[in-house]
Image (cartoon, rainbow, N blue to C red; front, side, top):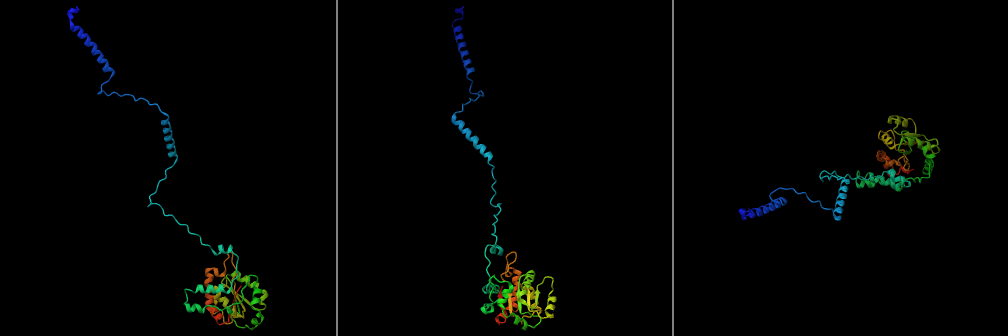
Amino acid sequence: MGDDLGDEWWDHEGNSDASEREEEKHEEQPSENTDVKTKPQKRKNTGTEKTVKAKKKKKNEQKELIVPQKKEPEDEKAPKVKRKRKKKTITDVLSTSEPKPGCPADLQNLITQYFSDKRSVIEQEELKLHDSCFLSSNDLTHSLSSYLKQVCPKWAKVQKQHTEKSSVVLLIVCSSALRTIELIKQLTTFKGEAKALKLFAKHIKVEEQMKLLQKGVTHIGVGTPGRISALVEKDGLNLQALRYVVLDWNWRDQKLRRMVDIPEIKLDFMKLLENGILSGCKKEKVKIGLF
């Protein structure tokens, strides 16, 4: 039988074995054209990879903690407001310094400063007062009565010689109605039989005060610059008989302001000086004292 098949049988058998082997190889190794997905092999984490991951995790946590601030564009940024320094008031300055008694130079400087832009250079020279125009100043040790006794030693004689109505011999200028009343009380031991009159605006009209001045002889007038100026302008008070002007210079209110530190009172005071007091000083008829 083998002889009948001949050599072809062996060849066929050998070929079949070879073909089976090739088919097995094809099954084990897929061809390049087939789309076979292979699972990626897991790589073992090394020590360096672990540290890198830990650092990245820490950095991410820090980013979450830090809240990002939105940067505003330069055009939209509001301009920074500069804080203005608070100017020191008179109260601030005086509360930290010892009070000093006024002197003639203080009044002269005030007059020069006030009229610097209102008068010519020649007119300003005419406003300068000589030392003979001033009485001695209060050194902060006197009461009003003791001060007046010092600067007006012949007061009893001056008082008797004065007989004109609507005029005064002594004019005391202060800052307020309350201060006026206080100073009149302090005059008790000095004035003797002399008559003192209150010259301020509170509850008293100008016309009423003019009538009081016309009724009888008044020796001393105590009041505010505003009301005294109004009386002078309306001819209710005549300054021809005036001999002494005492300024309540050193007294200070609750805010530690002097009479000339209060703008409205300072304005009235300078007006009063213009209305006849300065001219009387230049003629050596009137003398000024700073109490």
